[in-house]
Image (cartoon, rainbow, N blue to C red; front, side, top):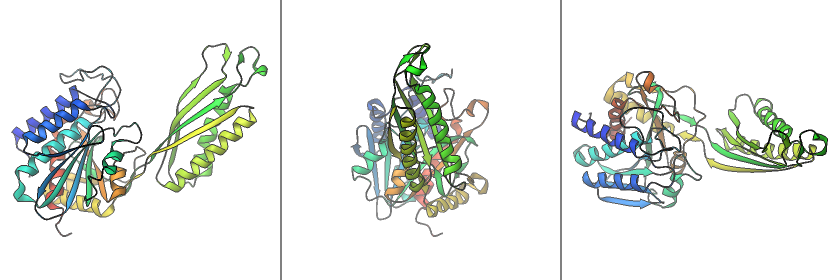
Length: 387
């Protein structure tokens, strides 16, 4: 069952408005106000403000399961490079990860479920979440800590994907996305003139050796059948071309699919920082912060979604993904809290809609969004059916 053409136009208008007015992180006052207003227009009035700017809206419809549908609302701190009529109106902020589409689809799904109460029974909680992109601990943490989703039996969410053809629903049962931990290494050496390196401690060499040693952790200290990524993405070092700096900071991420691998990497990184810093007569301190856990889709929920999509749209509308992604999502917190799954909604139609997530020219095929609304609503409608 699909939304009609009038509703689809409303869906596109929602997305374009949100795209033009991006807000970042935990600072979403206008986005929350807009979402709350729309929910009320659709007759959904049980709305709780959670965290700083998240919302949990509830539709009660008799006895039945409590299902949580989640959409993230935050944008990214980056400049848009598109030239279409609905570009971001805020310099330095852009919906480059599709959260504008996620929010719009969940709004329309809520509207549909409120209007068509005869098609389903139970309770739906519409979760509009801040700060999926961070900063740590991310918006899902506050929602779960609030206790407002403790009664949810199963969580379901969608994420747009420029890697899949428009309208396709794709997911991986089990390991779907990796953890994402942040690392920051502070190094203290001894500054000197570049002409006299023997009088100081050259932290550029120390940074280089540590970066290589971290990569060897993955290639030589972790089992080849495990997956892990260590990335040093930022190094702050030096102030002039002829001065050896006395301090440096290395920053990056660690990604894996198991807590055992995460712990091993953390311990080994601490050992390497201490070892190399001592060898170079420097001092080093590693700050390792566990941020998002691995996203492990509940297999039973994944297979349930497969059945629902194939029954309601056909075999070609659904696809299992063979390999997990090293990207991360704080949807993992919902799955760990109860059970659930997050799936990809294909939004690639042509070259314009093939730019990757977090790219300054990222855009979606808006015609795919109705299939996202379909997946959200049909998951609720058919959730209780026998396998």
